Length: 486
Image 1: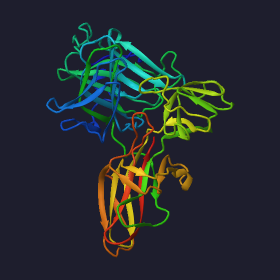
Image 2: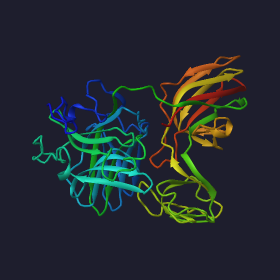
Image 3: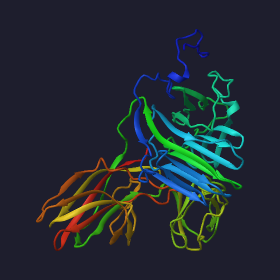
Image 4: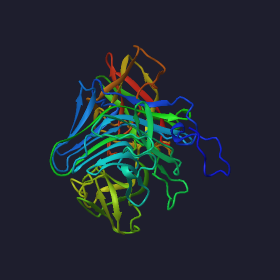
């Protein structure tokens, strides 16, 4: 359909929104899938993270070919989030489509689907009043959700009075569609596929918008997420099926820098044991490191020196002492004390056990980048098998920043101290022959990238495990990763 453009003095030839990507280009090129998944045989736990609170439950439904989120009691939560944060490429549009069943609106029930996390993104939200289009940003003032109710959608309210004449029924299965361009000032759109047609219903336009001085979200790197929350009581469900994420406007090769994780000396191996592990550093940006003078279930204190609210919206990671390993989002700070919450549950008391005097910590932003495996290089003076194990439980692990061992721009960590491993998924295996000399190199481009969990304090770990075929083998290994952080 040809339309006129009010920004030109004469009517040009132009195209309706349905024919344009979020960067304003005509949709004539094939979109390139960067992520697609269905749930015919399970929940795809290697590619999705689950989080539940209270009696919230997430169940694979094999006969229906999907996954059901269910809540029943007050404060129940069920969240499904893709492990990858999809890497935004400037000048390209990111689009996603997903099949969902919201169900009828209900008091005390919130359902969300889109490309978002606890801090940033764009998504549909359903509460007791109906559907909203939501844009979320955490750009220094805490998390701000801009909600637009269905009746106020800018393109088509899908209430029978919009330009399509369609009426959207959330009690029927729906195909949700979203796309965005980031740049900081890009455009976000939300819509539905109905009758084989893409019906855009709302657009968030940010460039030159009144009052817009900061980006519409802190980052364009976002995951796919489904979320169900309950206040009050009564069973409520949220179903989802297949999902795809695509890049429009051509897909460039993944950007990033390559860094090696390697043994510093040969390891004498007889029985099966880990010799080298790698993961992303829990915090990408580290803005402050210190030692607490006191702490509580929702706070951490130092002697002084901070500026009020300078850390608001960032995260604090407890790195040593009481409560080590916990991570929380900072909702505000005084000159001496952080106040925090749990970004998943919104609990104002996230620390258990609470930090205490002597607890060490870091303040920064959760690392949502990826380690993309490229090569495994091994050396052994005798016959040995080498395995790559994903997310095994390590004994005696001691993580060290790769930045401390000659790679100052790396945002990953390495371990060579662990002495045993249990569990995990074996994702690769190879061997060196008896009397082996020199080195062997293996291509790892088919091994999945490493990310982190919903909260961000438990990164994926890839471990090189070696076993001697006979007697003792002196072995060493190097893992080459591309760090996809942009």
